[in-house]
Image (cartoon, rainbow, N blue to C red; front, side):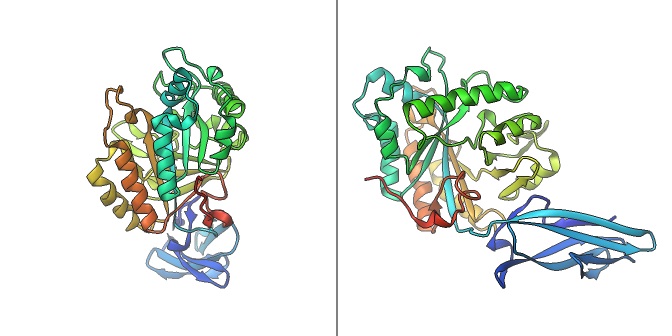
Length: 368
């Protein structure tokens, strides 16, 4: 049976997956075919050794169909895959923080003069000033003690706007509980909750601060609801794509083949919705301080994951009243940001360009 085994259908490829060639990216296509068949790839004869074949293909467009054809005694077979070329790719990282609600509740209750009178956004601002880091805070509509976003004042809107170059807000879920709130939810439920949070962000922080979400609480959805997200501007969804005894988890319920591939690679596009799935590289609250750098170094040694660092943590571990409080949580972020900065990774937002790979991504903006 004819099959292209590399690249994988939907793979996002960059300069680390091939070599520059006359304005394009030359990659190697590999696969398997019946022994006696003659194989062509995009019309050119492939090299064959037993059942294996290979061929060079130069990518020149953002998306390219790769078509292998095998012809022999049993007739003609065809297998095709489509790949995405990250043409403007450069080493970059994004930092996303989940489960945010405590800092908004704290600002509301304390009535601070400035957003940054709260230690948590103040600590993030320190990291921005030190490394140029950019953060997306994924927020809830309501907390279990009765606080809801409509209670949050819009009097900080100017301050939000002044810091929108490095600090964004996005939908995460309506509330923290129950766990896995959208795993079996309808598209209407997901869309309504997203719209409610997005509307509040726009009200109290402004359009400049809102960004489409890249992480839905618990990372589990019915595939049928993905168009609901795409319609609302979602371009990327990050997950863990980890294998458990019950199957793959935190994988947006993608099929096993794509989940397994993503567990070893950087990014994969779903062509039906246009959404790119990204593999999370580091979760700071799960990684001891002395393991931050070794984990990043291991990712950087893997050409299939080294170009984009998808960094992550959760808000609650910053707060002393939280049962699993981490006193060194900011130190963990500092260690991760120091490493990516020293190794030439630029901060980006995933909704700008392809996974943040916009041509303008070189301009790092620091808060005043």
